[in-house]
Each structure stands twice: as structure tokens, then as C-alpha cells.
Image 1 (tube, rainbow, N blue to C red):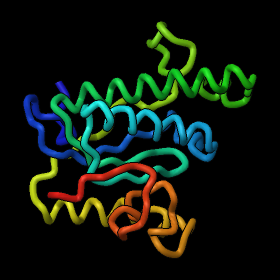
Image 2 (tube, rainbow, N blue to C red; image 1 turned 45 degrees about the vertical axis):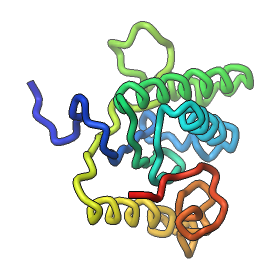
Image 3 (cartoon, helix red, strand yellow; image 1 turned 120 degrees about the horizontal axis):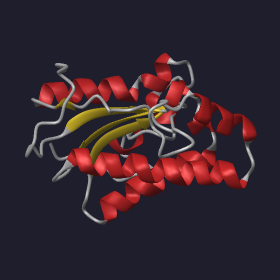
Image 4 (cartoon, helix red, strand yellow; image 1 turned 135 degrees about the horizontal axis):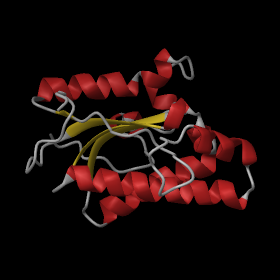
Length: 178
């Protein structure tokens, strides 16, 4: 049995820092349609009180979230399953053979129930144990686009809760009461 510090604690409803990555780190979120699938799904989960989001950043090949839910592991699994299906359907409808070939090539071989894999397995959940840890994770996330050289200031990155924390309009509502 593997031991990992990255696991959900059953029954715990506190916020977790999560990272979900596309298979083989493919830059699939550069496509605005795929990015919108991600945000639409997160909005749905929020609207149905299934997920509380404290912070987020979407990069070209991964998303960082700080979120909580009654059963966070289940909600994130549903999110990943739904967004994978919608994204793959988008690529199939547009006959994007290169992306589909990549999603098929990098699929885990023992997954015989599907032809493509969109997300890497796991989300590396880290329980937020203090306000200081929460601030550190939010700061880390919000500076991701700056460290990558995409923007000079974090609030210039459209796909981030930095805008919410700077009292600007963000793409998602976030809970700043922590």
C-alpha cells in the first residue's frame, strides 16, 4: 500500500489545495472553448451548492483550486469526468485528429473502458490546516502566470481568482470569508 500525504480525509469538509493536470501536460486549456467547459462546470457545482471555491487559477495544462465540499473527492471526480467527456466530444465534433491522437496515445493502457484520457489521475489534495497555509497557497497560485512570464501582474491573468481578491470581476465567484 502506498503512503502519500496527498489524500482526502474522509468526512473532512475543510478546504483543500488541489491540482488537476491534463494528460501528459498537454496545453489543452489554451483553447478558449475548453477553458469555458472548465468554468461552466465549476459554475454549475457552485450554483448547486456542491462546491465552495476559495481560489483558482487555470493555466494551459493544469488547474489549481482551493475548494471544499461535503464530499470533495466525489465532486472533483464528477468535475473531471464531466469536463473530460465534454472536451473530448468537442474535439470529436471538430475532427481534431492531432489532439485526439495525443489523448489516445497517453491513455493509461489498462483503462479499456475508454478510447481517450483527458486528465492525469489524481489531484494531489492537501488539506488547508491554517489561515497562513491558505494565504501561502493562494499567493503561490495567483503568481503562477507571472512566474511563467505570461503577465506582469497577477490580476492581469483572466483565468484566476486574483481578480476577485483585487476587488475586480472574476470569472467565478469565490468565498473570501476564511
